Image: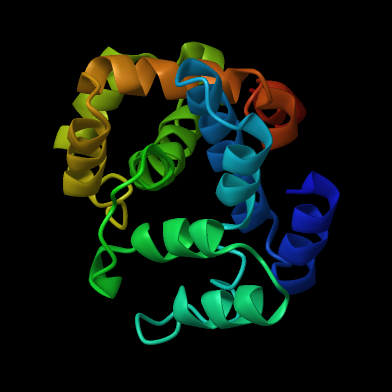
Length: 193
């Protein structure tokens, strides 16, 4: 589980800055959950980093994450990593049995939603985001409408954590890399906000 190799894989297939930042956000959440559950931090982080590496090239339900799984298998990635990535998409039919699989599902949609919430804050900063504001935005179906709220709720339940605790936990994990994500307030400063 080499992080440098995972980053190379991600950047080989993903040119979009926003998709790369999403990968970094999920990586941060997964790393934090691995610590919490006393699991393999490097492995969990790498799974978070590469879970959508094929999405930019193959975004359809017929292709993602199937194309990525094929590439990972060809390149000798372990079965448990490939299974976790397959299980993060509900429609694959791959059950989520391990904590690794449950955590990836729980963190994926939430990380994207937390980014969206931070970007509409005056300072465009994760420091301005809390569970209450996230829950309020979850009720607004017009906001970040591509994010599946049911997946966020179901993910926390499958992981066995309270939803507000899960939201707060992921906010804190992402705050650790806020500058890398462009969610440290510098974007607002640059735009003169």
